Image 1 (cartoon, one colour):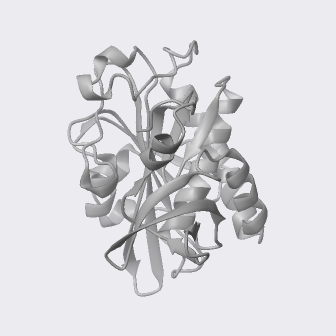
Image 2 (cartoon, one colour):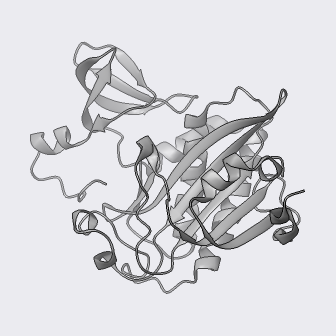
Length: 276
């Protein structure tokens, strides 16, 4: 047994899927990477791993998660889906809805979700999600739901290129402790996952769609190596974007880069703020 398990303490004892227990560490390279390389952690259902500092936080597409200079939330939830074929994109959307709901319940306003994994306040990124999976046995899959939230300080703590694209809860007028953010996310994620396991996926995705920034926007996207242009109309039951192309075909976009700037090129009056 790894020494890390000796540091695990109860959190929400009644939770089934998220935050039943907590491992808190002063510093790690990445909470996601720690979970993925430690079988004992991956095998612990509903475990929440939190670090005060991340030295090599990772974001989507292999990017670095900029941790800033103030106190922020860096954490990963260990989630064991009942269906091992469950797709990561839909789990990312579940986590995004939970994160949106948690920040709203803490007092955030002007919130929106940017597909697939960012939460924005007034068009500026305040939180992100990275879901990764790894088998822990032939019949058991673990999904690591990594969440980062910019809590304290202001955007000046981030690299210059991000200062107009990122924000913090404090900068948006919210005086909230890091652990309060953590606990509310755990509560909301548990609620969403309970609903998911009770067969409410369509209702959950409808809620996600109503809170998403991207619905109705024109984008550029890649399809079979070719650039296409289309309008986002929603998401399917696997978490993929549904995009109506100029050829009147509906495309399903699962991963990769999409260019929201195309929409802004068409309409300079767009007031939704910069994307991150």
